[in-house]
Length: 117
Image (cartoon, rainbow, N blue to C red):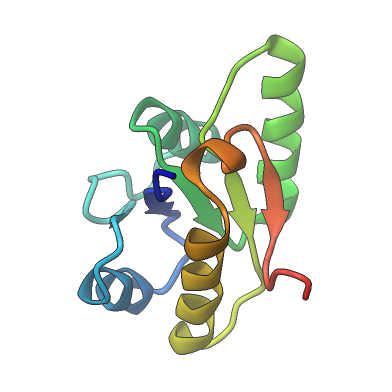
């Protein structure tokens, strides 16, 4: 079971990426990818092209983009949302996500954190 690689949208605290990488997870960010100020559609396209699940706090815009992509038959590695919380909380949620779902299980899914259960 391949673990999901994550891509953090520019609205996510940069401390989250640093903590996740330190913990051994495959995580990159809009900042490290040079994608600051890219549109949300461009952010998702970048994540999809690099086979990374995108994590964002921008639920409304990414939900609309995901719906458009589904109608167009476009695929992505997954979209994960949460409200803004402290970096430690976000990291624990993302760790649970990566440990609970394989990259294949997240493909074309849209999930909200924290996970139920």
